[in-house]
Image 1 (cartoon, rainbow, N blue to C red):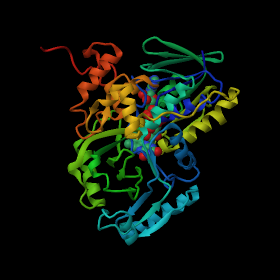
Image 2: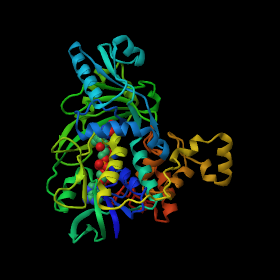
Image 3: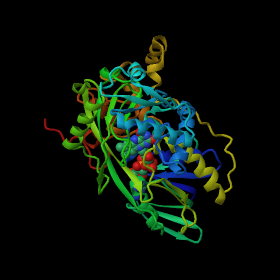
Image 4: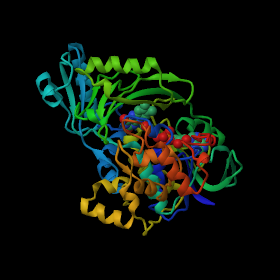
Length: 476
Ligand SMILES: Cc1cc2nc3c(=O)[nH]c(=O)nc-3n(C[C@H](O)[C@H](O)[C@H](O)COP(=O)(O)OP(=O)(O)OC[C@H]3O[C@@H](n4cnc5c(N)ncnc54)[C@H](O)[C@@H]3O)c2cc1C
């Protein structure tokens, strides 16, 4: 029996789980996939938005600004890469100047600091590769970038280090409330009882609320496709560059990532499900729009494409409240962009302002918010590296040549919370397979390391979840 069960292992569930462990509560997370960070939180732009885009007086506006202010310290505590690189919304025609002014005014109402209108000359000084058709820009110095999977995984890992439990492949299919306790059932028959539920199931948060008896939430999907460029093109832009937004969202952006790639995207297409395949049309749209925004984008450096599905609510704002019909059920639904930015602020609010109304919060004096980053090895001096390699020779063996990831780092990712047990889970933690060859060279070695570490036959090693084994047996 738990005090609180968090349903959904994305960034919202992850930051809430961590916040809960600051108190002496028994808490756990259930996630339907084989690893955490498999929903929207793994496939987004990774922008820590400044907060000028959201409609004033919405939850999006409120939590965007708070989350943006918290992100630097939050990421630092958890060893998560964050860069305050700034953002530019660019006008590509005189008629768009008014849109920049409107955004500036809206941002100021939302409380965003330092917004500034730039003329063409100042814009070119900041971004020499901007298209000749640009006429000016809105500059937002508080905008940043963060690695979304590092943020999610580190939050959950740190929560686990502080006592939270994680149950993966726990696909919630039934929720019953008897007297004051919930009984949450998984498809495979497992059951968990708790006093409170925090529903952070992303695209499925409406369905989870319905299972518990609250039919008030309707969620729809809007797909965003991306193209990722190799690190060789890392100096193409410094700021995150947006065109003027439309009704469907912020439009296509060009941005550095915290790992030195350049991300281009995303599209915004209504979708009836949460499938994340990319399309020829979507990728062409990105190329065409980026071609309009920038001079000579280095498209030959494209190494992969991917997509995420924004889960937006029928009220087009975040829903963060205790259910009006089911006491003890807290819904965090419709958390589309800027949900990544907002997550640390949402977590604080959910625990301090909502959970606290039902459960008494006593501080956990043993809480330790610090976490060793997965990339600790690359930060060591040559002497420190040699010292470690002497003790643990696996750190001397490079497995992923593109991203220079060692066997030691892969084993580390398999041993710390939340433990990686598949090829993709390792990729998200230490970047083996994220580089130019996309795992072409290292995937088999990574699979061999997994088989050995988990003591399983090679043909049981999975790329991701159930049924994703990469081999079927020996041919010779
Ligand atoms: C294309 C795109 C671009 C974006 N760009 C940005 C950006 O630049 N900046 C920003 O701030 N935000 C951005 N966002 C928004 C941000 O990614 C989301 O707001 C955030 O990731 C939502 O997190 P979540 O935890 O609510 O949902 P998710 O990450 O989707 O997590 C939900 C989890 O619940 C699990 N789950 C679902 N059903 C069940 C079940 N029955 N049982 C158990 N588990 C279940 C899922 O498997 C999943 O892991 C973007 C989103 C998209 C899609």
